[in-house]
Length: 343
Image 1 (cartoon, rainbow, N blue to C red):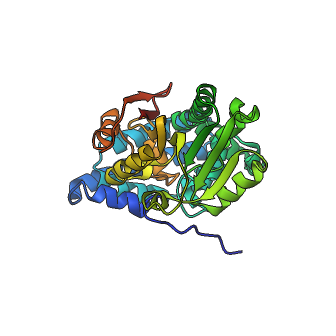
Image 2: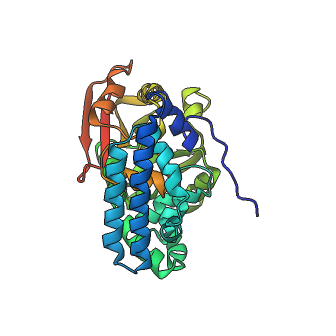
Image 3: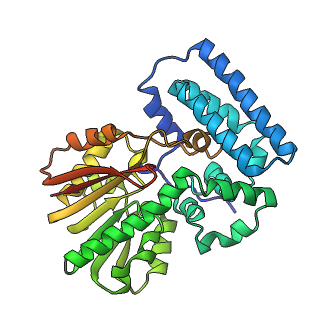
């Protein structure tokens, strides 16, 4: 069967090309000397890793070394040099070991046609929906998975799910008949942890996503509840193509990592316009320098727009809409930056 490829709208689903375009706009031409130095260092890193795999070295130790070495190499490379090195790493024979990990493989192969899809998050969540695929992994693949699912980024993603459920429950406790909107909702796994949903204390919870498979999954999983699965994207929100109404709480937790600042500002403004008086908007973005970007961008082929607290504040400061309260915080391990805006 031919693999379904989700149509991209240029805003809400990331491709390697879109990240490359973002990078290319900020740096100049590649420096030949740096390329040669980077290639030599990468070759050594990958050779040592392959030797470790061939020698059946303990997986946690060799994965830790690989992750750290890639991170150091990325940190001293220009964005364009790093993009070149990442493509070389992906073609190296050592990938055959790493791609036995179901999480790394799913991210690299992108069966849905884009990065960071809902099933990828299910591997991070260790959700029952992917249990069969995890069970089918080779013994080595299982060991690598046991490492990658405990990486700082994965830990931050699981914490993000818990925080989203907690925010929804808080809004429901403070607001009667609360209305919630999740943008780029994926499978809406946070809803499985919401006490407000279990207690039927929400008026509606709109789960908007561009991927029809995700929309169908949410519709099926939460049939008969207040959750409404809607097919839509950043483009449809900005273009006001859908009459979604107004909300007490809107969040976009897995989206801003893929948006250029100009689009992020526009989306933030539109979300604030869709809030009721006193309503809150939450955005989340992976933080820069969490220690695993090198591995994610090479063998997972998962490019992101990593941001600093200052860069998240830059988005907020450019928003042309009244904001009564605003804050920027980080999760427990610092891997995700959260901005909460109240109108």
